[in-house]
Image (cartoon, rainbow, N blue to C red; front, side):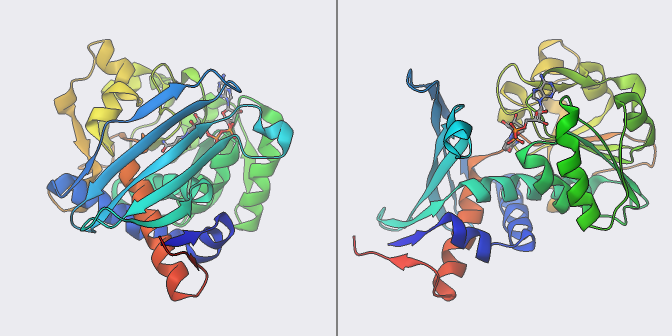
Length: 321
Ligand code: NAD
């Protein structure tokens, strides 16, 4: 059995490796070769923590496992990340534990890979202005991955807490991209691609602000009650997601579906575009939306890569079961 630390995950799993692993598993999901199992998420009545499991099986990649963890809101005071998780991988032939892999860095890199995949497959090729909504922990990973997908010339950003924007600006500077803090209306009017990654519970971007042809990767809404977009905007867009069942229950489309503005049948798994079974964007004026809800199979895919690379590079600890 392998043990792969957080530090090792950061060392061995590149953005490219995460992108390839997540793209492959989205394709497998759309072919019916990989399944996510029902998500468990519970308030444990201690430390105000939310704890749960995301799990699944990828028959194509032979990856079976579970990500266990959640959200401990007081961790910051202890110098720890609030989101904590660990991935357990099992041998699908025997059920024996195969690897324990740190899940914190992998969660960020697999989430960023997911929006990057949507940009690669759905954004206009001539997209030049990247709009960021959100400037927290995930936003920096999102910006780095998104910036690799098109020849962006500048980054514009808005955040609910403006004091957090300079740290995102530093990442843009590292990438050689001019960075400007703007109001949301300006962001909608100028951005060709928008990534939203906040913990908002109300619509932040309204339909009338978004110009035709924009691609939006909506990544923050991963729980019932969270919201980043005007439901009218969701209804007006061509909507793609990682998994429809999650999108309509805990993802961004929950609000448009509840309002009767969008039907389940209007939503396409991004894996169908990856597999060439759906054309994706069909016109330059279309607004495309990717609702990235975050599925367990993404975690298992990147954890499996981490375990393999760590073993190959002599970075994994081996323990007898
Ligand atoms: P974080 O706590 O580091 O940052 C939170 C961000 O949300 C900041 O930009 C903050 O200013 C903003 N924010 C807080 N309250 C707000 C409000 N009322 N209105 C608008 N913005 C507000 O969190 P993070 O780790 O960067 O995660 C951001 C979001 O992404 C969370 O909702 C998290 O659950 C979600 N997430 C999604 C996935 C996925 O796969 N889709 C994966 C990981 C995290």
